[in-house]
Image 1 (cartoon, rainbow, N blue to C red):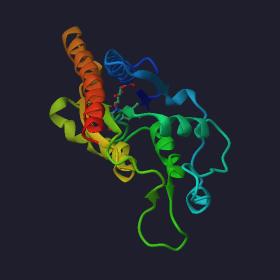
Image 2: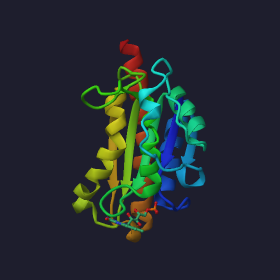
Image 3: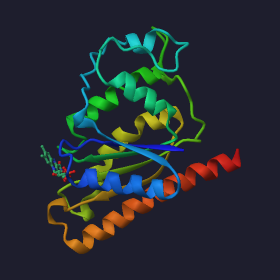
Length: 208
Ligand SMILES: Cc1cc2nc3c(=O)[nH]c(=O)nc-3n(C[C@H](O)[C@H](O)[C@H](O)COP(=O)(O)O)c2cc1C
């Protein structure tokens, strides 16, 4: 089993990065192969909205995007993986541009016939055998956790269409005032999220 972590903070040594690493370690403790993508380190150009990836090559599992950068490789790894950790800070009530650029460039996972009504559909449906967990951090305290809802929505929208379940979501607030005790508690919590993610994937496969 392969679990990928997509980390959207521009700070690659910040808390989002550490929580992602911790969740992936939890997944690894249950036998998963893991890989963390600190997205800011990759070349991910902005989606130009040309729809070529969506309208053309419906027979392919991933549509062809005319932009040449790291996304084609990332999407191949994305499609082959079994589960995902998505982690993002709250920036101005939503995800930062780094994470948003990545999410928009997952558009080649979808297809649509030109002129058809409704939103595009997933090229490959996962029938809820793949799972994901979400982490968001912010300076607003835990009692204002609802501030992270737009982040969770943005990070999980594609999963809904691909039929990938979201298992857990965690908001860690007051991020600039994390003392040692709370840091340890949140590292433990994120580690457990990774364990839980692998267990949920195994469970759904046993049911099959
Ligand atoms: C441009 C910018 C916008 C931010 N907007 C918000 C916000 O709307 N709500 C909030 O709670 N925190 C906000 N923050 C605080 C970040 O969420 C916080 O710095 C981040 O969670 C730290 O995570 P990291 O250590 O992984 O970078 C903002 C920070 C920056 C730099």
